[in-house]
Image (cartoon, rainbow, N blue to C red; front, side, top):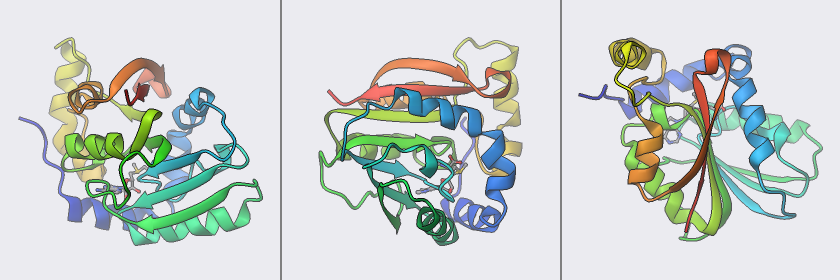
Length: 210
Ligand SMILES: C[S@@+](CC[C@H](N)C(=O)[O-])C[C@H]1O[C@@H](n2cnc3c(N)ncnc32)[C@H](O)[C@@H]1O
């Protein structure tokens, strides 16, 4: 049985984290986030959606002339992202909205790239969020997810991930979710998963919309 994530708890928790998130999780999760941008196809004026943008820890990595739309369920996180974007002089256009990733208020086939860093394990219905990400991506568009994903071997480490889930969910994410399988089950074509972060606990998961 998967550990349950409560959306209102997550919204309150991440709003509480917002003033110091970058100083704690921001740095800890930085290698995977930074490395994932190596796989971003560079096209001028491409429209990118970042789901669960948080305080804007990725904004500095977007190439010039990107048109980025960032959404997050937490209003204080969105406020932080706006403040960070205002200080950047990267030539990109940024726009932010408070929005639930499970109900993206965008038309179908709208974005060249959809990005989600460390978000899928913080949402109540990860399949629905992945389906929404797929829906708003253009055909042929990239879907880049950076996340911890539960292993599939059924070994001691995987059992530990299951055991630790109720503890980690209180901190803000679950550890018992096989994110790669969720993406595949949701219709995202997963092309590659690259190990990242401390002890290789994270994955950069590269997907596309057929
Ligand atoms: C672990 S943080 C990741 C933040 C950022 N992407 C990063 O790279 O560090 C998870 C973020 O997802 C947001 N979040 C959680 N549930 C969400 C939902 N249902 N819809 C949109 N954002 C959500 C949280 O508010 C938080 O900012």
